[in-house]
Image (tube, rainbow, N blue to C red; front, side, top):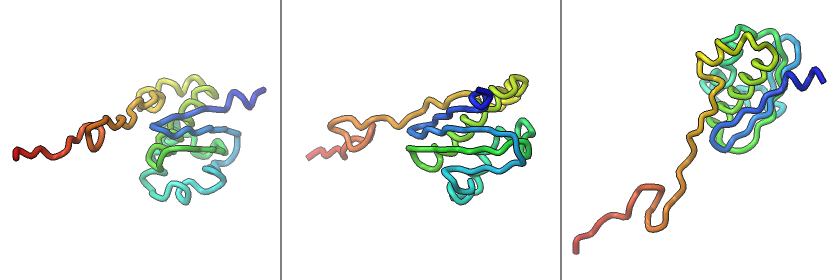
Length: 130
């Protein structure tokens, strides 16, 4: 039952990350890989692990993450959201710092759907006068 307090679900675009925190020495695995190896870019790894930096808990937890859907950027955002929510459930004192950093807010921006008669969501075909 105590383990359920250390879970968090993060979402961004079409990506969903399930995060599990366990007390440990700071190992992070994303879909059973190293975060940098999975996400491919140091910037995305830093964005994904931002909640740990904000709360100063880099070496306190072992984190297991399962992430599905979306692209690498959306997945990194989902991971950050999930870690922030799990940390908040673990210790409510972290909430103020995470909220101030904007890590608890679910980014609601999604890809706009394509409309008929247009090439993309808003791009119209080129106008020809004659």
